[in-house]
Image (tube, rainbow, N blue to C red; front, side, top):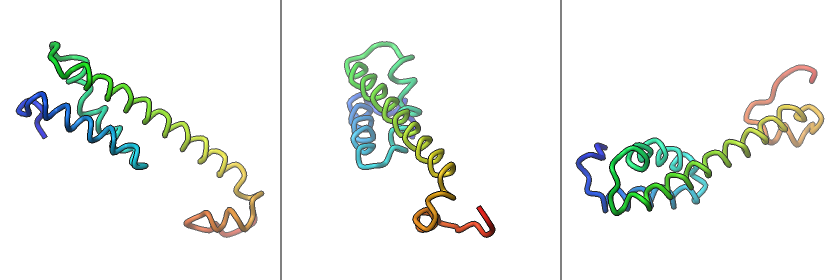
Length: 101
């Protein structure tokens, strides 16, 4: 989508939809929101809707960072304790490694 051709009200509406969509456990929408609207929020000359777009982009960025931190902590914990958790960890895994842990 070319944001240059979209009116400012529609940009705000789209940015808001992606921001709210991120709360439906879809943090990828927050990442898309940040990538698409960063330039619009911080590098374009000021216009009426820009302040709200900027706030949605900042909040989306915080949401992405939060999800990255949570996923990194979970992946690190799971990889570290997988062998100790035994059968429970095997049920949580998509693939069960063969061999002695």
